[in-house]
Image 1 (tube, rainbow, N blue to C red):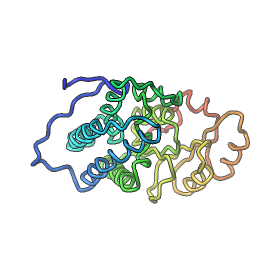
Image 2 (cartoon, helix red, strand yellow):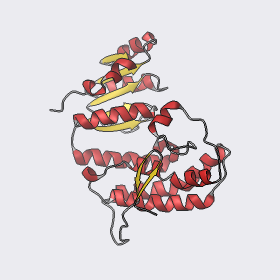
Image 3 (cartoon, one colour):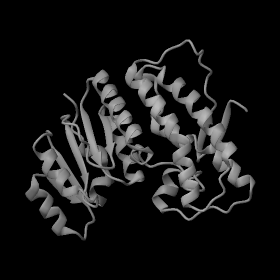
Image 4 (cartoon, rainbow, N blue to C red):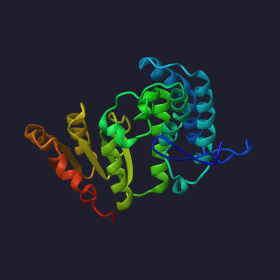
Length: 262
């Protein structure tokens, strides 16, 4: 295997081998590693079965091994040097079954256009959009790790309540440029952590609850939704949103909605 490979639409680097005697940064990172690795084969096998695709079991063994090594390499690094998130590594770990299916001549599956833009190489729609779909243990371990990372940074934080992968990518880029630490929540978080800013997609099924909850705990709440849904935006303001705007306006410049950290 070469060190530089392409999969899932991005450049993939083979993980740097880590001596087994090295330990991870802390128990939170260790729990995340073990939970993600344990979830890999059940999740991938389930995705394949649900889509009526061949099982390609050997590729899942290879993917699990690649995931463990890659995650350990990532989590051994200080937070500031971690170029990818653990979920992105898990998504990349879908390359062995993807390549195995391609070698069998399996046709690409139909995917949502937003998913195609976010992960063009995920030809069989195998990569998880959120750690939620990996099971409760993996999801909670991921949340705990995210909280630990945010606490280590100690900077301003923003939470985005959305299930749209493309939206999340745009907000993440803007948040990074503005100096914020972003948490993306596909469902409402159960923790009582306070965020500097909350962004709520009004097309999310729990949008009303999110606006109401964050209005009481965050410094500022901004909601966005389809420009034709004036009622949803009025309702969001009534529930406590500081701003409720059409998504076209919000995404014309997401960074403009992020006040400069003080």
